[in-house]
Amino acid sequence: MTRYAWLSIAAALLTMGLKALAYVLTGSVGLLSDALESGVNLVAALFALVILTIVAQPPDEEHAYGHEKAEYFSSGVEGTLILLASVLILMRAIDRLLNPIALNQLNLGLAISVTASLVNFGVARVLARVGREQDSIALQADAQHLMTDVWTSAAVLVGVGLMALTGWSQMDPLLAIGAAGYIAWSGLSLLRRSAYGLMDPALPPDAVALVETLLQDYAGDGIQYHALRTRQAGARSFVSVHIQVPGDWSVQRGHDLLEALEHEIRTSVPSAAVFTHLEPIEDPASWRDQQLDRPVPEAGRPEGQ
Image 1 (cartoon, rainbow, N blue to C red):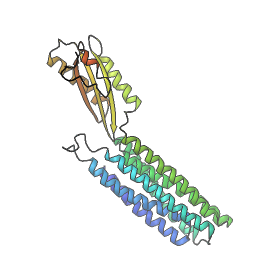
Image 2: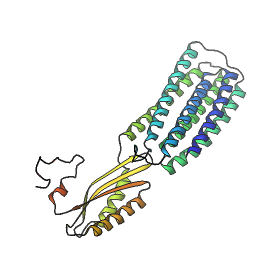
Image 3: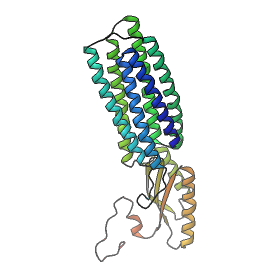
Image 4: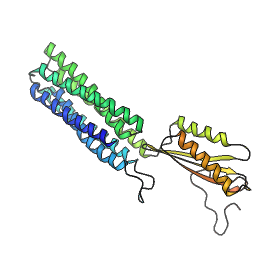
């Protein structure tokens, strides 16, 4: 997926240059807000490239469950940068509101800004599609940021165009203040999503329901299950469950059952790592581990007695 991060970097460099040129030509603080956000896009895309490079590494001794969770740091950093950009835009807009100036070459500046927005729109669509297909929160965050840039640009272009028609110079900084608010909301949304991901959330309800349906297909004839737990870490999913079978089953028979069940779950839930635990259904200890924290047996007394 790193090639899509490079695509985002190229788009950020191009649009930042175009919007900076539009600001220099016109002096519009609204267009300056656009240029600043494109600068944030560039920093965020560079960070996303680093994170996606880490995510692509296979599990190792220090990270036995993989590196996918690093994507949440990418979206968190991007959300923070978006908030920083909104503050800078707000400060500049307030200054311009108090000290208005006449704008220049609006037609040329608007044409350049429109070109930059079209570039962002095209790249955002590509990143959003790949992010959904690969369950990459880093690419989805980048796409969301670019689309925020597109909508902000559209609002700025409308405002600057109205200002050119009406001559009301305060329209430009007021619109920049509105854009700063919208950008801040987008940054907070990314931060909330990143924090939620770092808290090891369960799989989406439809995925959990699918796993439960598969388990129910195996239940019966002395077979039960409990302690089903799921976890999402970036693009990787984790499923663990305890399977209870008659105690007189052979090890091979129990193993064959778990192999078949794990295969069905992995086939139905993309990128799922499945962990199963086989237990004799008659043993009282098999019923004591349904919660995450299992009671510790008393010293000198075997569990189950």
